[in-house]
Length: 285
Length: 267
Image (cartoon, rainbow over all chains, first blue to last red; front, side, top):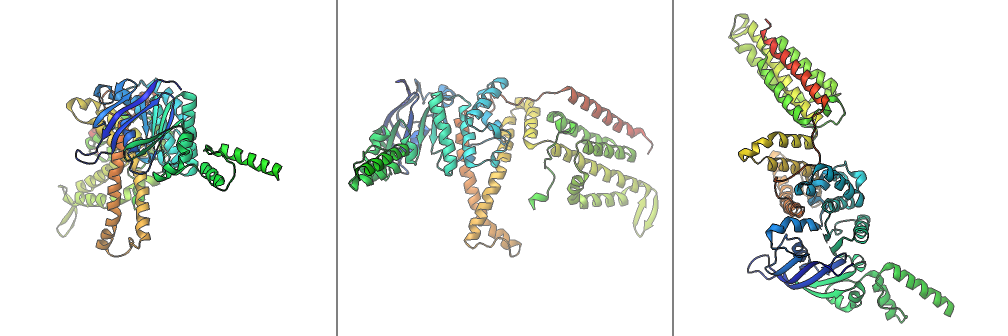
């Protein structure tokens, strides 16, 4: 991860209608290249609206949004911005355009006017990365939810974006589909340095991020590493948000009088801690 | 209900007919239909029917399928036959009350029936052997020159593609809504026609609303993937005319020429 900034919003305000209450109220944030950022928040806090500002689907009423050094309000840069920042939405059925998987993955490249030979290579590469190569000749309606969502991801990464914005991309999937999608996203982030911004309701997904932004009422109210954020569990609960199950367990154990650290948020760390606790317990007893 | 209609259905396969470039196939089908109207006698019509049956055999499509697709059109075929039988001008050979059947009448009736059979068989063969996506693609490429006249060729093809893509999704959704309404006590399967149509309203309204929402989201997802109309677009799959296509076309054109030549036969 470098210090180079990928996305930056400067005090943006946004209202869907002119005299309606603003959905975003002065949001300033930065995402660095290669980072995996999770955005949390209760329903209606403005997180999807923020996400749509990252690739100029929405333009701020006030303030500026920058993608690298491009202003999203600059219409001449529109295609460059959308090629750099790919977006995946919640419902896979509503973002697949073509009747065959590989044709859908090629859709963005066809729009960008990539020559056919190069397109074939990039489409195959994107399908391999998303793990759907073997389904390339199938119709999208024959695939499971997780597979469809990976087709949508492949369709976006075929553009070779620098940044991927996932707007609750796992919300409609079953646990297996969710695991498949998260594995693909981690792979893209770690091995290809693609910056990821993911909006999610699942605290376990957020716990894996490099940084967590918590939104409430159109503002960013918390910003830090998952540990820094989840430690403030009382505050999280007041925002109608959960903390990861692992941490919930640790807090309960601590309340019961056991000497448990407060900053455990991942399931693996929690399991290791419990094993240690049981061993020392046995040694003591 | 919808499942029984075979017109427009696709039977995948790997015959020369299937492999033929879809643009050529579309044009040859049009040529065949035009030639059918240039042929005026029974021998020509029989030959034309033989040509199309031969193509069905080559494409390995069971003739049963063809027969099934003709069944709903049987009344029209019979009506045409009867009309031609009684109303053609000529020397009557049989006369029943005011109805006269002439030699010409019999002749025209047979020609007409054969022509309709050829029309159905020929146009069905196109859709049987070409997948809808490929056909859409072919239409777009063939009509591309008309874009100069500001005909929205790309937009029409895009709409066809999206419509095809969403057919299975919407069928699934309709079933889901029907089940949901049935679970709330809706009665969709009984009553007279009016009652049934009325019972469908609570199915259709949610279906429409959700379709509009889908369209909205799809438009946004397309924009996210840099969709900006047909300008400067390329296609991954290119269509190439192969040597085999040329040979097939030549054979077909020869057959068409023979068909037109039957005009000068005496019967």
